[in-house]
Length: 328
Ligand code: PBG
Image 1 (cartoon, rainbow, N blue to C red):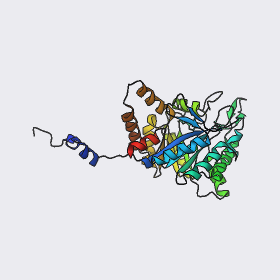
Image 2: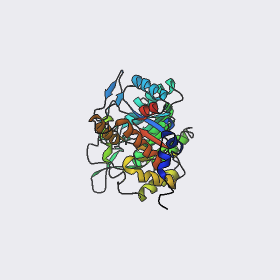
Image 3: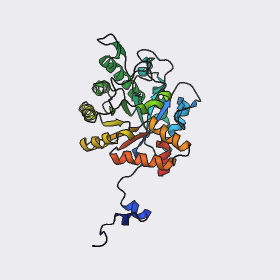
Image 4: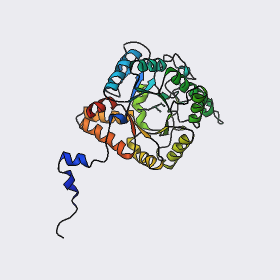
């Protein structure tokens, strides 16, 4: 036989054929838009390391949330930046917290928009860690797991009371899903789902976010609670643990450098898998595009599609609004 019988190129000859056999699709319904809210009015602070992203106040956030919803994005995830930070992160679980006011305002403006909240202490603590600090057995400061659980549960409850549709713990303490589930259930919020940041790695790609949320750790780093990047098996244990504790959606974070983790999670767990395309992934493409080194829109589409192809149902991405507008 002089020529190959199978010619895979036959089905690549024009856009119609390519569309017909396309295996993976990106839809606006797959996207979740992260937004940062801080006290004040009329605020629209550009985030230097994340060009195109802003810190909002409640009033401007509502306008942005409307634009996100109009683009067809079904959900936002809110990060709060408090008025004052303290050792216990007390604004995280205050009913008067800026995130709570933001939830109420957004739900009033666009009731159909799913409002998710990030449940963590690092934006609220003066030391910038995701929990409260106690001395460990060597006398060194360490994030105290069990004391933190109580505060996370209070925070999730405050968000649910304000009207959050879904809560998303990102702290990586052991047992937080149980603690949050119990607190929600005991207070009549048994229908509020939990999206757990389950396989959250100690990644350098969160760098720009810490500018955005003003939350860099003031000493040490997050390696005693976030996962060690080389570990895939352990990621499966983290995910399984969160599912056992009642998580409704499990997340892998970051996305781009952890596509294998997403794929394995999608193969192993019959659950909606979310992936967080984090601030550093955003900054890399934005910086390359701003320099004219990469075609911006094509790069974004390729990356988001890759995350879907790896097996993520949902993608948290700073490009959510823009990508949804392209997909219209
Ligand atoms: C809070 C939190 C972080 C991110 C989401 N929730 C920062 C961190 O853990 O350091 C990172 C998001 C991003 O980089 O886009 N714990």
